[in-house]
Length: 209
Image 1 (cartoon, rainbow, N blue to C red):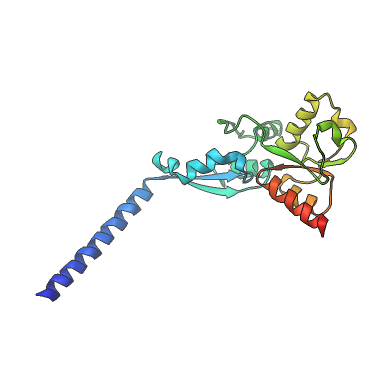
Image 2 (cartoon, rainbow, N blue to C red; image 1 turned 30 degrees about the horizontal axis):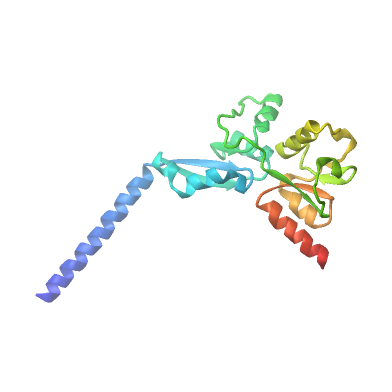
């Protein structure tokens, strides 16, 4: 009798597991798959990450797959080639695609942030730093058509600083800025957080050695 009860109990447990698995599978199948090309990881995009972790997208019936795609130009290419449905990057990409007279344009439809999230990291400590302190020293800004450069140039403009008279290096891609700076290139660099803090510490350690 005990064996029968034990076997019956095991069968009920197995049945419950199977039903639970089928239910979860059905729920998963009800979600709409959306691939998103993300231009970079940054604490500046915290609302985006919080929404993912708390399941807000699932609540709206979306299964989000995030693909790191450094560079707004590469994000645009991923969208145009239908590798992803949405590109997460600066709005300048829509303008560049439009100027190339593509048959299918990219549309910017939402904004996550209102302020720029980049920081200027210096190789040397400067007390009470001002943008004018940069002078003729080399600044790694990212490509000239990217948002990090454009925002930096706008900041200079607001301080009545002529960017054409500065040593702005636009040859290094945004994704490679930190590596180039650690390698000894440039006196200043534009970086997002948390990269700005980490890379600043690494530069100090490298310099000390």
